[in-house]
Image (tube, rainbow, N blue to C red; front, side, top):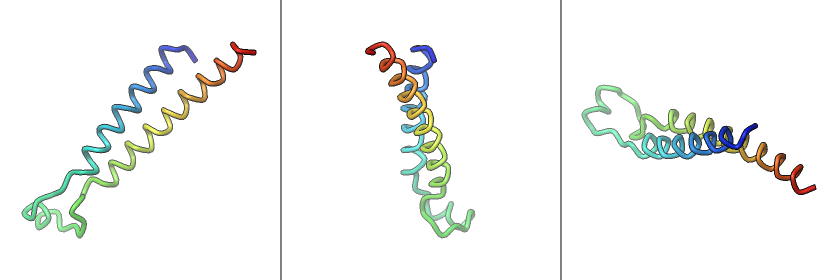
Length: 75
């Protein structure tokens, strides 16, 4: 994998982590709870975990690719 692709994957991972934090910390108001009728005050927690998972996978992919490349360059 090229360095630009690895860097892009890391940037995407950081962006997804930032979006996940916003979704995870969103707290609905009382009026929205009555309309949605969910028992949790954090309705987008599942979406946050999805973004967190995709960001983690892209970060691990980029770091494995980079470590393989540098390992070959050192030896």
